[in-house]
Length: 74
Image (cartoon, rainbow, N blue to C red):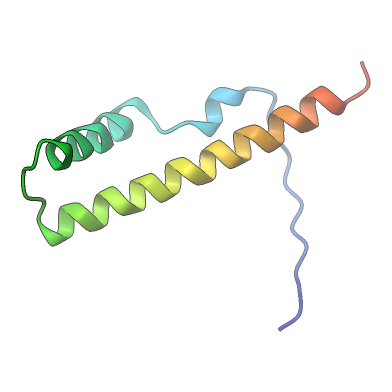
């Protein structure tokens, strides 16, 4: 398999690298239920895992954008 380089423009607004409020609320609801010992259905567990993965990706993008922004000459 050949490597592929993808270039994307990084927005200056870091808010774009966060889960939307309603999506984050849903994730917190699922995690809170799980932490309190309540059963999550297989669909809910899959949803929570996907949302956690998405949140982690967005955090990574936010970190990289912050580093890129701070390394730009003024």
